[in-house]
Every structure is written in structure tokens, then in C-alpha cells.
Image 1 (cartoon, helix red, strand yellow):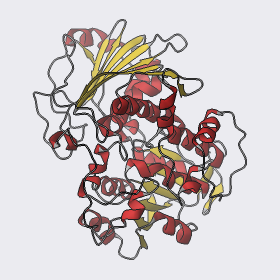
Image 2 (cartoon, one colour; image 1 turned 180 degrees about the vertical axis):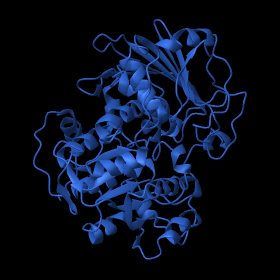
Image 3 (cartoon, rainbow, N blue to C red; image 1 turned 30 degrees about the vertical axis):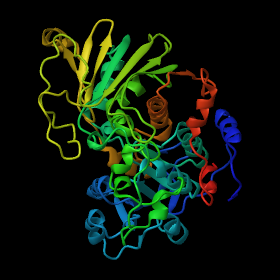
Image 4 (cartoon, rainbow, N blue to C red; image 1 turned 45 degrees about the vertical axis):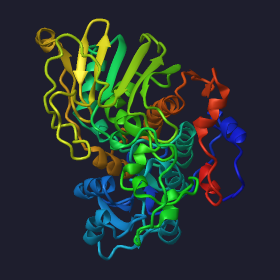
Length: 480
């Protein structure tokens, strides 16, 4: 692989060339052509189980690992985590005492590429892209946690690589394989959901940075690196910075440099079905209506963002308004009813649901009906209740999901299903959030050209579509 430095201008020009020629992909180790294709030319895995390597096995990675293991459809052949042996990684390590273990995924790829067919990636947002690109170049199928990547152009390149290397991909917004997905699809096809003009989306639970001083004017001071930790690999392509506990164990989500805040974290669980089935694509405008305590380092204490999507075919324009923050709860429509505890919505960092708050979720407004819904697998309801009863006989039957999100990915690796949140579906959704993060960071309105994929009202902001140039030694992972 070439180690040349990529100029920002060359990257942006290359990213805009969506019709670039695609060359033949290398063969996938341990897979063969057979059966129903999962991707256009369907390289699928042998046997009844997929050989998989886990990258990131603590915290959310622990949950993903259990999700994969519980399917009974995979063999775990390698484990990797930058903090191998820390409290949060020991459980998965102890489950597989004889499996090779690594701190650095690059070393694992170099030594074991012929031993696995797929990877599960549950690392900080800023490191998703390099790992996914390296895996796809090796012909490996990729399951990666949401949000897909840290920047708009990283998402663009992941779609390009998915097509070039013909691998199965899945972003980890697990509700995209649950009841909400199949209900939204069935109601859209039956004409129950039509002529949508506005969506309100909200996630108002406490976040890690809500207890911080919003007047912080610098990154936290360095601290001793834990003995079990490979801090250099954690940094990945990012600018070198001293270790601090407020960058680790989920705290990275707070910082613009490493994570995507509440929007990137929960947007993929709240807006995913609306984005796909209403064919929203990319917005033409993103306007920050309210940013409380905006600063240059971590996310605002509260945010209200307005995304404007144009008409698509016979579907009218849609305004999507996002609310986050403890004091930033949107008004709900008449007839909304109560906001009861919803078991389909995971707890936020183990916190109990507060009845005075709205559940994380959305309200969808069409020309004739109003819907309310939660996040993840939560289904929609027509409101008010009187209208729901009136419509009851008109509602189509909703099929049950044939597989959960992990099963869907692994069965797709075998050629038996098609991934529901493949990169060509999940990347445009993630790009919406990347544009929202730029508005949160800068405090500026964005006018966006959907065809050229450029910010047109302030061209200098186009540099933020890409983000910082990768540090020396990481350039090769940014080439498709």
C-alpha cells in the first residue's frame, strides 16, 4: 500500500467522483462463491459458522460480543482491545482463554488475516474508519458500531470501499432489524405513512458532559497511562495527545475530536427508519437553532438543529428538528398521551427513565396523520388515540423479523440474507449527523449541495467534511 500523504483537495475531489470505475476485488480467505448472494457478486463464507475477530470488547463491545456469540452462528478466533486486561475487557477474555489476543488490530490483521472472515468493530468513533478500510481491503466482512464514522468524507469512502471490495457490511443500529423497521416499511408501502412534512426527534437524557464546566478552554492534562493500555493505538490516526481518563471508556463521545455526541450516538436509533423509507438522503440546509454553552472542545449542553430535506419524487420536503439536552425538551402535539417507560429503549448509561421527560424518540407529522415513536425497536403509534382507533382496521399486517441485527449480519456473510444496515444505507444517514456535528461545532448554518456534496455558503467549512489529515504512519488506511 502507498504511504503518500493525501492532500485535502485531492481527497475532496476524489470523494466527489461517485462514478469512479470499480476494479475487481481480491478473493476472500475462507469464503467461496455459492448460494444466494449477499452482495452483488456474493462472496460468502463456508460452513454454518462465520469465523470472526472482535475489535473492542469492553463496554458496548462486550454487549456486541455477546450479541454475536448468542446467535450460535460464529466462531470467535481472535480478540483485540487497546486496554486488554482492564476490568471492562476481562469478561470476554475469560470466555475465550485460548483465543489469540491483541492490543493492536494492525498486528492482528498481519498475523491472522487468513484465520477470520469478518470483524466486529466497537471502538471510539474516530477509529472506525481506519479499521473498517483495512478490513475491507483484506476482503473481510465488517460489522461496526454506530455512528459509522467520524466525518462525512470517511462515510463517503466507506461506501466506495464496500462496492469495490464486495464485502458484507452492517452498521450497529440494532433497531434496524427489530419491529420498528418492519412496521415502518409495511405502513409506508400501505400508504399509512405518506406525505410526511416534519419530524421532531429528541434525546434529552443526561449525558457525560452535562456535569462538566462548559467554560473549559483546553483539553485535560495528561495522566499516567494504565499499564494494560496501548494509548498510541487508541489514538489511531488522530493528533497525538496525552492520555486522560476523560478520553476513555465512553468519555471519548463527549469530545468533538473523537466522538459525535448525542446526535451521532442516538440519531441512528431514532431517525434510521424514517431516513431510509422516506428516502431523505442528504439535507440542503442544517441550521443550529439553539446551542447552549457551545465551545471548541466538547458538545453543547443542549442543541436544537433544523435539517431541511427537499422534495423527493412525489414526496414533499421534510423538516427534521433534533433536540438534545436536559432543559431542551420539545413540545408534543395534542393527543400525545403519556411518555411511559418503553422496554424497547435501552437505558442511557444505566440511568432510570424519568417520567417527567420524554422517551428518546420522535414525532412524525404528515398532511393527514401524526405518529409518535421511540428509538431502537420501538413501534409507532397514531395519535390521538381516537384517530388510532379509527385507523385500526386499515393497518396492514406487519411481519415479524426473521433475524436480529447480529444474525442478519452473520447470515448475510453466509449468503442467506441481505444486511439491513449495509454501508450504502447507513452511510448517508451517518453523513446527516456529520453535517449536524459541523453545525454544533461551528455554530454556523450550513447550506449544502447534495449533488456536489459540498458546503456552498461557507466553502472553508468543507475542510470539516474531511477532518484533520491522519498523522504520520496512518495515511495508507485512508486510501480505498
